[in-house]
Amino acid sequence: EAEVAQSPRYKITEKSQAVAFWCDPISGHATLYWYRQILGQGPELLVQFQDESVVDDSQLPKDRFSAERLKGVDSTLKIQPAELGDSAMYLCASSLARLGTGELFFGEGSRLTVL
Amino acid sequence: GQNIDQPTEMTATEGAIVQINCTYQTSGFNGLFWYQQHAGEAPTFLSYNVLDGLEEKGRFSSFLSRSKGYSYLLLKELQMKDSASYLCAVSPPGGGNKLTFGTGTQLKVEL
Image 1 (cartoon, rainbow over the protein chains, first blue to last red):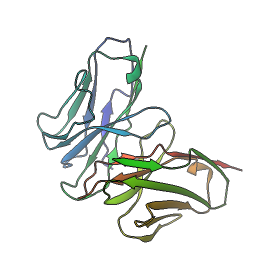
Image 2: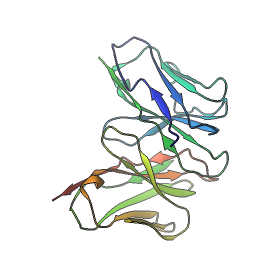
Image 3: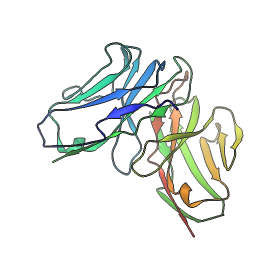
Image 4: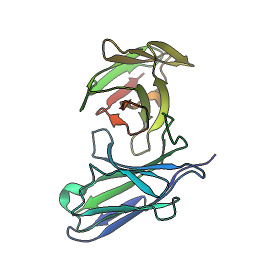
């Protein structure tokens, strides 16, 4: 069964360091999302890609966060510098639907701890 | 904007039926999703309602009332493996998967 791949699963870093997360969506899925989930809360959307283009990054803290999906396939989310409040699970999701609404498929997530 | 409310925690007994409610106030609305998330794992899709009424899928059913801004997830014949967080999420006007999630309801199934 096709899955959304993410790495690393766990990352511990000190504040002010740079971190990067990678996501490979299900093959053929045009739309890719990065969500952040703080413990005990629901996921919050950070950025949405349609192919290689950013559709929505209104909730992405652009002073320290960046995201790219250069070839419209895999994607990288970067944080520089990391802050204590960035400790969370970073979830990548993809969907086949270009328009309309379809099911989101989530990866296992990357859990970030900032010390 | 979107405001989604669901209970924080619920406890139920194995073999029983439990109903998890979700209310929402949105500036626009297309449809409502339910996801299941086990501790430390990714959310997995359970159901999607866009029309009013009940959608049944095995032991799980989901109901939507658009006029009341209300949905519920019904779990029958509860099993221990159903212990998880259940996330209610709404999709924006015009469709699309830019979902806004509630905080989730942590369900604990006991013997």
